[in-house]
Image (cartoon, rainbow, N blue to C red; front, side, top):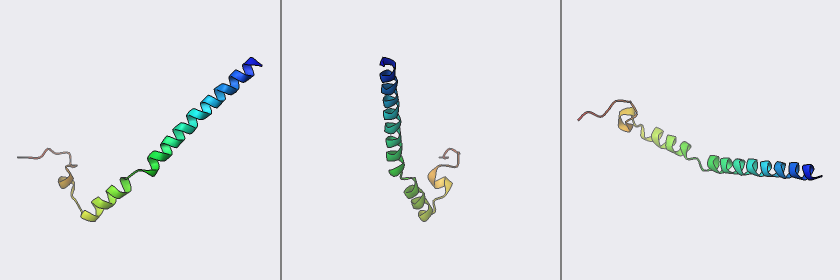
Length: 60
């Protein structure tokens, strides 16, 4: 009987960890702003040089 209760408590603990992880992941996905950032960049037609994403250092 003690082993059964211990096993069930371990399952409950594992379930709580999984639910907490899924809730955190859902919160992250729902508040992601990548779409808005890409829409802003697309609407303003920045070049890679303007964004400093071309990999080259800026020459002075």
